[in-house]
Image 1 (cartoon, rainbow, N blue to C red):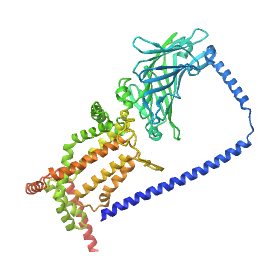
Image 2 (cartoon, rainbow, N blue to C red):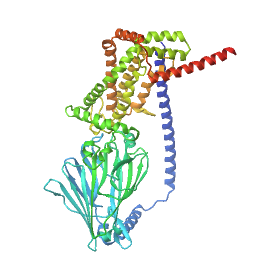
Image 3 (tube, one colour):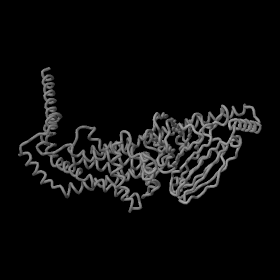
Length: 612
């Protein structure tokens, strides 16, 4: 009856939580709407009192001033300062690249095989600029990003790669050539910068590259994608990244820098490396589709010569481990298989989870079934350890009547009961911690799969049952409000994972002696309730795995407890061990000594109180 009341209590508590968050959210919306109405009213009054201006004249003056500034800054490259933008499109099997002659740079990259949730193709580099300063005249310099190059038509080479050249010519014979090479199936673009007259165009051979990169939303929800976005880089041939910080200064040579979102990245690679530089990282906090932005400044020291050649590469593509490992050293670490405090799971993902997943994906087309097969594999590997825990649980079940008798005997004397309980466990050869093994095993496996499913682009857009995308949460209902730590939706796979966890907790509670400690007694109800908030925003592949794993656990426990483990034999073995000579482990000796000391202290306190 108590358990029934507890369940009802938690249901009522959950209902109160929902009502509270709904009411609070409604109030917040009403306050925000009222504040916005006030701002709009003030803005209308200010607009009415503002003197009208001649917008056409203002625009003309602005354009005239801008033209004069650009002509002055262009110096010996006056024609390039006043050109017109021309776009050149080059396609290969995996992407469509639009180049602009303004700055001779990539304008947009469309990934052909990766649709967005809205149905369009993933578009990268839409608001990026990249360039470097050159000397255009005495005491005058300008960024190449603002100059108009002359574009040539793409040329197809003998190896089917395409090459496009952009040329910038100065009045004194200086030339700059940007040459891009696109191979048929590659996401990496070779970018070679050739400078004739480098001793004049670059001050003391200093090549200072500025790259402004912006990350736009590509997935279903911007909040989570924004959260996992970061800047990755290789400094002195060692991988590192920034996520929560806003700036990084490079003191050692830099091989590459990439701005990374959940499943895609844009990376600048220097074949000869950069001597140093810095990156500023800003994550947006508004509700726009812009996730974050990075300002990257990199420096290289070129030989003091009339000509210079700077070989670079630009990667625009997926965070696919198998692709990235063939691009540049350490680029595969962009795929988060475990970092920082979770770095211990990276070897598990790299050498166990991923190879097994790829093996099953090689002959099973639906990734939901691949996850199920992966779950079966994990449970099979861990079966010997989990069996010992089930055996320990069976022994505990056999001893339950004796433990209940001890409880009645000692009553409120918890220390006396604990000492006798330990003695009983020692005589029976029972390890009271044996049942914790499955829970302990779940910890590294859960964190490994959390990293793996969150970063596995193979799951992106893959449908299974009611889930439209295994890499994101599955939503069966949209709430009219958002609950903190829960979200504004209900995930069905989360409900199945929580329900099966609850059933496991109830089953285990019935298999173990009753607990007087309220925290332990109510844990079977509290833990699944916590999972409801933890799981609701996680990828459906992970909650599907957890559901399957729980179902397997329930089935194994039922079969082992009822058909494999012979309780009469266990009881007979326990009786044999009771008659055999006893030898305590060091842990048991220390635990017994501690309990005896506490018992003596308690007896002394009781005697003192009785004398008073």
